Image (tube, rainbow, N blue to C red; front, side, top):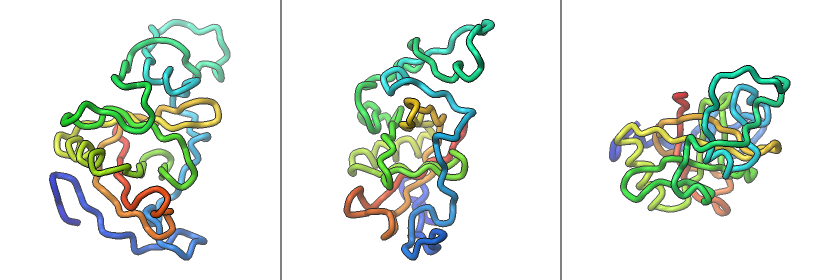
Length: 182
């Protein structure tokens, strides 16, 4: 593994995904169904997720199953929260990322502990390099059928080339690799 600009540069994957004859960036990690992440917060939509605030500890009269969906507040208060994708003020790194769950584009692995986010362009890659150099975490959200799930805080762990089985022509040739820290 080489170091470039403070972030790890990973070699091209050499393993093949189970049942797939084409190499993929997952390199043997198990893909995760985000619908099954019961321990994560779920919001009714992305705008609500970006405005979430923790409510004080009070007894809740709603059944436990309903407490996962939060509909109020302003805790995260991310700037540019109306935008999908990644956002961060220029030169300071990315503060939050939203994956709209387009099949094959972004990949959640190992029970939500790893996340491969498809890079849109060199400007976004440069912003993620700032995160890696400053060890600045990124809040990651993912669209699910119930709304939007907060996958947590992630550190940028480097960049991974997409394999031939990763729809390179459609989505791009490189992922940023995240590791969950919270």
